[in-house]
Length: 276
Image (cartoon, rainbow, N blue to C red; front, side):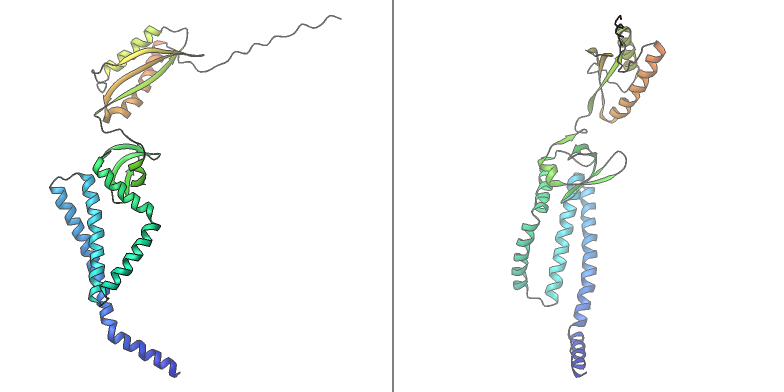
């Protein structure tokens, strides 16, 4: 019982001596972190007004936010009386150990810096990388955020993006579309090519320059293949790609051009019965 009373007294003395300091530190931590977030947003708005590149804005905002939060923690530790010299020494050792454990994270940070320097893509570009395809929504300290055409958000580490292959579909204003249409061997290839040319000429999304190409490309087992190549603005690429298929199908059906499908003829030969 006496031991319990001694422990309670010790706990009470601890609360009286350090309680208010502890509560104050917690309050300061909450307020400081809130201010850090607020200041990082203000910093982002300033960069936005000065028309800084959107990719660089997001990256700098992330770095400033992290630095401000670290500053808040150090300030509060100093206010509560933690010896900073010893703390920094311990923190350095811990940081070294964490750095070894989180080498991948450091690689992602370095990758983010390289992306901003080399600029293989920027916010708003449609890219394909690391097995994913989507529009770049944000470039942050450790990762890049992609939004797929079906509205799925994907987070891709910057390390892989900076060292791997990246296909950027938005870097050029125009793209070349290509289609391959098969017709039956008995159909008129010249007529089919004329139909395809009219479809391209009538579509305003197909650019006049460079001139589109229509040529017989291959003689397959079941079809004569005609390849069509045309240029369009990058923004019109996918809608044009889908619409041309539909227009060609309808035009071929209307003009009596058959679209074949793979087939195989099997001939059965019956052996003559042996005479008795």
